[in-house]
Length: 275
Image 1 (cartoon, helix red, strand yellow):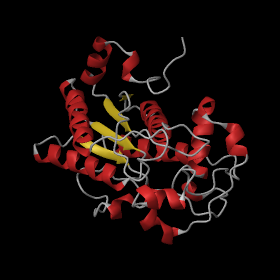
Image 2 (tube, rainbow, N blue to C red):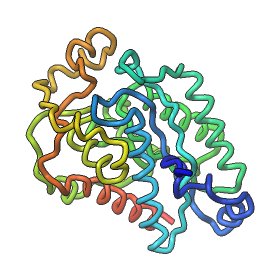
Image 3 (cartoon, rainbow, N blue to C red):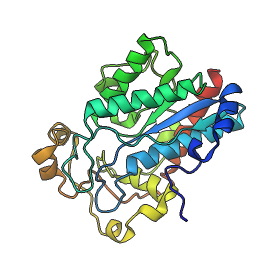
């Protein structure tokens, strides 16, 4: 029987006793967060959840190797999708549903004895990220300071879009290093199902890619000026990105996937330094 890729390497494969023992040793818990939404003709609808999962597993591996044990929780993939909600394959989750579910999952991890629970979310939708921010802020107000946000996609300027700086207590502070920019890029402006996301999925979940479709996909000709209208979703998003991708789907650098591996290494260093 084929293994569920979103469960592989997570607590889902562990017994309750093993999880309890790890929490008692002081292990961290990392929660991958994503959505199910259209990512063009070439990538799976689980792209954001898959990348969050990969980042969480890589970070846990690096941290554990440095002496800070970290476990990966089963992925939360029912986030909010407002921009591409009407595209094929996308699931529409009400904000209140997503918030209650995320809050319950975080509470469950605390109840299982984890003193620190870290959220890794790879999804740029503002409503989705506002939901995470609000859930974490409410938990902090109730004294759950061990719940923190480790990763939101910094290349999408998420701190500023949320009206935050990254220094708030809900965040694990870390700075992107120069190695994250040391790659050849197409030069095409992209934010969705673009060269970065294709590189990650081809590397970590290659069996989910439609390579025949990918081979023939041209880059979009959109700019940063098109973002506000695209983010309106609905007819505006369909007019600008009728095929459900924004950017250049085909990377020109075969090592672009290392952007995510390097990100995980930096985050792991931040976790180890903060213990």
